[in-house]
Length: 459
Image (cartoon, rainbow, N blue to C red):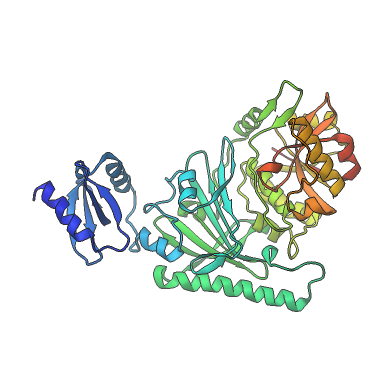
């Protein structure tokens, strides 16, 4: 059969498809059809919803379509019986653009899923949204969606369906009855997700993800080298994580960067400015969202900067973060120490001598400092005003972030990421989004609210 006849046949067959893919031939004509099979002889079998098929050579199509077919041909495994288009319909979100997510650029995948860029460094990129139950995934209300990527491609994805930190209207004393009701809602949410997947992907196997205090039992489905894992932590959260099957087989661990390479990379992250500022770059931003998760979010930022995979919801679980937020420092430290140690690093307390001179040793080595303090409106205003002055901006009368920590008084934790010995200032970074990635405060103002707790992660 001649090529022109083939393309004409596809046009006729493709017209009845509900959600076909658009293909274009070398003569500029477009056709809609779904891929059934890509053959080693560089032909592709296309199928309509009526079940009719036609086989077409790769070079029928324009170069962009040929490249997509060649990528599919290079896959070292057989495709799952459930096509990626059906998975997108099941999830209710354009998660996949082809059978494999892991060769997609992080930015392209985020755009497809309508996620906002949260952070991009020289080594990683992440996108996040907080639908807060107003969007559904797998027909279930979802509160948080996060896409994590490396320097080029997608590495993992996370959906949080219901989490105690996102429960609306909960503050102060929470009665046992309310906590029990919340636990039941979380479990019901997770089971609805489970029941949505079973008819399509079959019965899941039970597996473990993480290690030590971060270890969780999950339901696991495997599809086209994607491990789809549902975690229901009693009374805490119902969440789904998607990662490469090979990584899931290692309980979520990634290949560790060598110590010497990490030291060199971190030293390269130290920026020295003409005005005397010394600052650590490339610390990813994690926006804690509308909940009191400053401690889990800040720890996740530090751990990811040190090339240690982390998730603030797991950290909140391990650190026993309370309903709506609030974490005791000693519990979080105890929970993270084993994770840090298992990755060949060490958590070290340092003297709370808060001055540019005393912290310079750590900042110069590219080591951020975890700092615990009493956040007050007076301190936050001083930080915002001082930063605005430095940047030559007009100071605002009201300059808050909308976060509870910024508008009231309470225990808080953030990263110290820089210093200036000439001006007597230190740079801090909060888990409230990009606007709070770098603020400068007078060291004397910081000492007034410091609560004495400071730590670094070392090799």
